[in-house]
Amino acid sequence: MTDKTNGNHDIFRTSDLPLAAYLDIAGVPLYQVVHEGNGHGVFEFVDEPGREELVKGWYSGQDPIPSAQAFWQQVRLMKRRLEVEIANTKRT
Image (cartoon, rainbow, N blue to C red; front, side, top):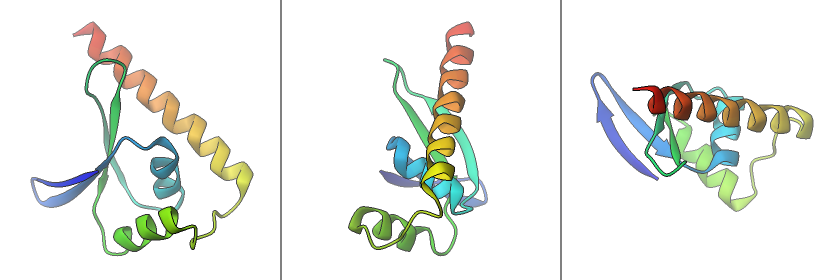
């Protein structure tokens, strides 16, 4: 995970699919999905106030997931977004 600046806002990057799904459920805006080759992708989120606490909570187990079903559905959605980005990259 690294932070970078993109235009007018900071970007938080992660290749951790469950974390990406969790951040998406928590309402952190997804900026884009990037295919970085070899089937690997990175989820880039707008780095808003509170994002750091969400990540710390995720890794420490201190921040509960709203519901297991919503979490699993979001993991599948994030995986599909990554697959679409990989397919789009291969076409160019």
